[in-house]
Structure formats: structure tokens, C-alpha cells
Image 1 (cartoon, rainbow, N blue to C red):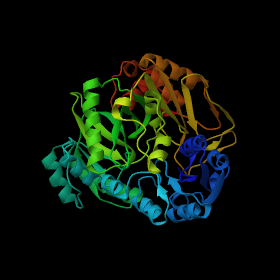
Image 2 (image 1 turned 45 degrees about the vertical axis):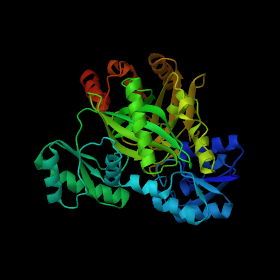
Image 3 (image 1 turned 180 degrees about the vertical axis):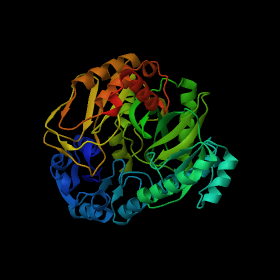
Image 4 (image 1 turned 135 degrees about the horizontal axis):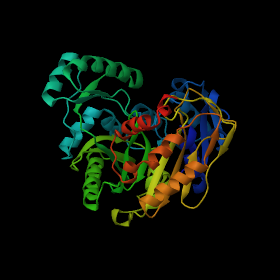
Length: 456
């Protein structure tokens, strides 16, 4: 087992990893930018290291500075969390060359799944259904030819993308050129690679993902699904497990495909295989995230596991702690992401947190990286915290989450808590009648009924 781990991240996930390490008796090293010197993750670890100025490119994405900090501190391993450098194969490779264990999958697996078009080819060869689509297209002429072959409507996506960044829906031919150019620009800005590809647009799909885990000896399991259809701007804000749409037969089929995906790339560690599911229960491979997910706590709550500790065990060379038969899912868990933003138009909100209070109670969990006096700046993602609840039945979990949100106090910045409560009160959400366009339709209903909410 490792004696010291450096956490190459910030915010709530850094605090989450620090907590797991402390419970395992492992010393921690946090890294921070100049803007984060008083952040919770920076002051709660055993050691801390300044890695650069506030902007992400010069601090949390500065691989050289992070690895130098790990070497100087004597850390044996680096946990990348999610986002930032967590799916960067160059960073994972640099860790390996520096003699530091990267707590994540092999470099080859990250590379294969990082380029979405290559990932699609691998999945098709493995017999896993994928959304009809194209290879990377470098010119508009190629894109138009592919679009006519696939058939409109289509989605234009960044080949090296993730998190919904740059995705463009195109419903007719005359709109393709503008969407193609815009997607290439955003792909270049976000990922350094302008390549894009096209996919058939699945009408009103659900976004459902399977949590997977594998060790170095090829033992691979899935831990059920997470329903992730409640999204704003292609980014999730509420997740739950199990999905109200999935029955045991479909869960087994999707889980088997997710395990096949892992084996096809010799995967190691925690990962997530994401699927789009249509109204007829056909599911299609969307992408694989080769890291821990923001929403991993809902799986932990229903499966009674600790995925972060398991990442550390597996990275240190140990076998998985459980086999497939030992993974028993029980109850229902919900997660709400709390963002510093206007709840109805999603504009980020910055400022000083002047008052902070989170709910407490049985079956309520709060993962956060903030405190009173913390400055919410424009430099980083606006997520402040995650509230996770568990109950035996979905309706009870919804009720408990509403109580928890109503008890949450965050003053000094706007948050999306009012929208989260609106979602939980919505009759379609309560009956499980949801898809990835739920938020759009909800906001329209709120505007029709209340008028001024969405204009604030």
C-alpha cells in the first residue's frame, strides 16, 4: 500500500480523495493555485504545494509542475480525480516515466477511449451497439457527404471531446456548415484537436451509464447503472441509481456490454461506459470515461462500496475486493449537484460565501470543497457541492432530497438549488418520465406558468 499520495485536483473531489486516504492511513499532498491557497482541499491535506497562478492552464493543467511537486514531496502515486488531467494520456505517461503510479487506467486504454471515433471502432469490433456515425471529418465537403449518408438530424461532435463541449445539433443541410465550423473551433480551444465527427441524432434519448471496475489480473465487474438524463447544456445536474427505466434484464445486458468494453481495451481501475437509450429500450455506446465520475457516490450508496479506496487498492497491485456475485444493489440513491449560477439561465455567479450550512442526517451525504469565507472565482468550474441521499424507495429518496436541499444554506452567491427543487417537484420527474431534454421542457413550462423566473 502507498504511504503518500498527491492529489492532482481541487474542490470537492480533492477533499473526497483526501478523506479516503486518511481513512486508509495514507499521507496526502494537495496542490493549489494562487487563487486556491485557502481552499478546503489545500488546508485539509498533510502537505500542500503551490503549482501556479489562478488560470487552469498554468496551474491544475501544468503537468510538469504537478509531477515536480510529487517528486519533491516523495509521493509514490498521483490521484487525478475527475476532469483536468484525469484523462490525459500524456500526463499518465509522464507519471510512469517519473516512477510515480498513476491511479487510473493504463495509458493505452486512455488513448483508445479519448479519441471518440477510435472508441467507436473498438466497440463495434467487440460487438457492442453504437450510434450510426462517421469517421473524423476534416473538411465541410466530407461532413456533408457523411451527413447525407447518415441522414438528418445529426450531431456534430469533437473527436477528442467530452462533457458535451462543442456538440452541435443539426436538423437540416443548410445549418451544417455553421455547426461544423463552430464545433471545430470549440474542439481546438478545449482539447487542442479540431477534428470532429458526425452521429445520428437519437430523438429524446435517456443517458444511462454503467459503473465498471477492473484489476490488473483481468477481473472485471459492473456495479449497475446510473440515470443521468437530467442535464443542462449537456452536463448532468441530477443522477440516480437505479434508473426508473431499466429492468433487471436490461441492466444485465448493459452491464455485460460494459464489461466487454473493458476487456476489449485491457482496462484497469474505475471507469464508466455511457449509453444513449431510445424509447424502445435500444441502447447504444456513447463513450467511455476512463476515470472516476462526479456522480460516483450514488453507486457507492446503493452498492455499499468505496470506489476511491478501491482505486487505491487496485493501483497498488491488489485484486478487486469483490466479484460480480458479491455486488448487491439495494435501495435508491439520488445526487444533486449544487452550482454557483443563476438557476434559470445558468450564468455563473461569483463572490464570497458569507454563510454556509449543509444538512445532516441518516442517509444524507454531502461532498464539498467550500467553507465560509471561500471566494468563488471565475477561474474554475462552478460546482460547489454534491448532496447525495439514499432511501429504500425512489419516492422516499426524492422526498429526503427535497428536505436536504431546503436545509442547505449558501449565501454570498446565487446557486441552482431553486431549479433542483423545481425538478424534484415536477410530476414527470417523479414518475420517471425523463430524457435529456427534460430541463428544456421544464424551463418552458416554468416560463409559461410563472413568467419571470427564467428571465431573472
